[in-house]
Length: 293
Ligand SMILES: [Zn+2]
Image 1 (cartoon, helix red, strand yellow):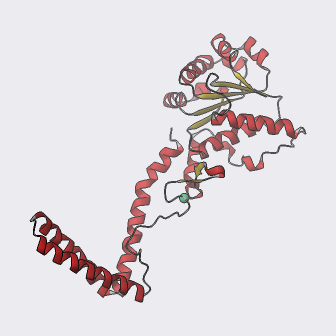
Image 2 (tube, helix red, strand yellow):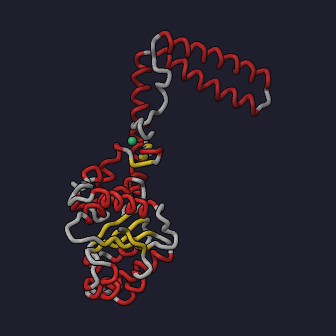
Image 3 (cartoon, helix red, strand yellow):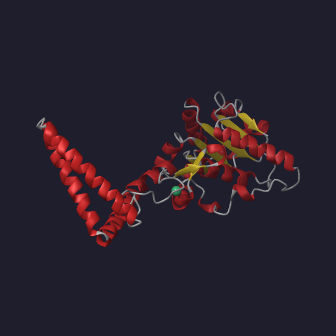
């Protein structure tokens, strides 16, 4: 499973190459337009080499001579650059994206680093890899707090869900959380958006429907045991009793809880009903889960 940090890191070598190519192009153009500058620069390089040899030979007299020559060349160079209006940084590599300095992360609200807009393609690829491919149109911006009335409660749930994801809602002793709400109240929308937010903050995250747990590839199951944030949607007691789902779920939750990694189960059923009807191994864990409500 490719995380957003992994995807951004994978593109770094290419970004560096592009930066170097761009610098070389600018240097070639400037040197073609001002051959005297090229000449000064190559003389500076030669003198620095000679000076290094003089240093190694402890020839102070020669070293001093080269130092003065280099200073003269540098001031000639400065004058030439100034008089011709040449960019003084023409020979330096410049970031392709000034917003994130090519790190892939820019400052978001309150200075929190978020994935830069120049990494939109990586973000989309990551969403696709993290179970979010079917939800391209779901965005936090479009989350309607007034949907079905009671905007205050919906805002509260959203904030709590966000805090749980950020680890700000005392998740230390409660890595497992349950978000129960009536059917058709936008739970999936919220769960998807919060998973996307986690990814845009650089976290490794995954979204899956509970019924799909038994269809995941073995290495994906291994990966979701270790990622920062996991959301299991459409969680229901009877689902855990079929197709090894109880076994997969139990082992995923076991490893994640031991590592203190946050998991949120999203369900249309109330906690008491889930605890009563679930695979026994899972209901034991559910009893200790935090509640988003
Ligand atoms: Zn950027």
